[in-house]
Length: 166
Image 1 (cartoon, rainbow, N blue to C red):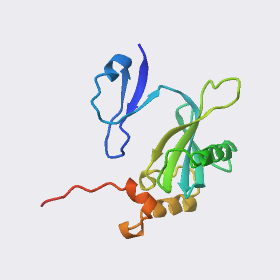
Image 2: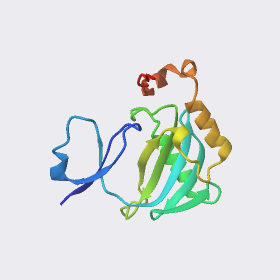
Image 3: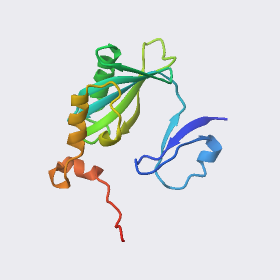
Image 4: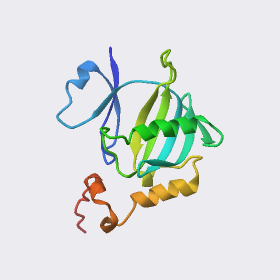
């Protein structure tokens, strides 16, 4: 039985499910992200603004919490270099201030380590782990501007708030 990871693509939706291929066919038309189940050797959190990594931290090794600042793990620089390719022309667009988790896939081929995106997160909702707090804060502040200060290219990432009645 094929196992896949299915996630809703919006931060406001919750839940994830592992499902076999037959169950996937029963999904409605709601957009979802589907991935093979993978294992990461090491995972990094990157705080990115205007396509540049301003802060980075290792946060897991072999699926276990294991924090290290970028100066303590030279692979943080490799993770940042990989992340810079995510903002190249032709790649799916991300908000100008965002947190991206990336990792080295376990059991990568003979060609060497294989980097992959784990997920993109809202900067204001992401722990900085062992990343430089000043760099992380700069990204959080860039992502948390008043609506009037949001750049036109980022406006499509805004969520409309529901009306609240009291």
